Amino acid sequence: MASPPAPETSRLERVLAAMVAASIGLTLVCFAATLIASATGTTDFAAGVWPAVVALPLIGLPVGFILLVILVVINWSRRRKSTPRNK
Image (cartoon, rainbow, N blue to C red):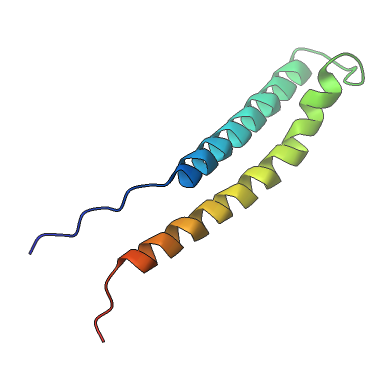
């Protein structure tokens, strides 16, 4: 028996997936930059671009997680609607 074809992804799902990847990716880059800067001896994180680099992981990871949960719920809802009910 052949499996049913996978439903097409919507534009909303693609945009949410890109937002999740960008949010978490940028957060990981900023986290790595902070670790590398600390390891090389930087002590003044209050000057220049460092306040934004240090604060971004505090905002980016929760936002990325919330967007990921929204994406999973939308995907689950779409798949549930597309499967036929046998009752």
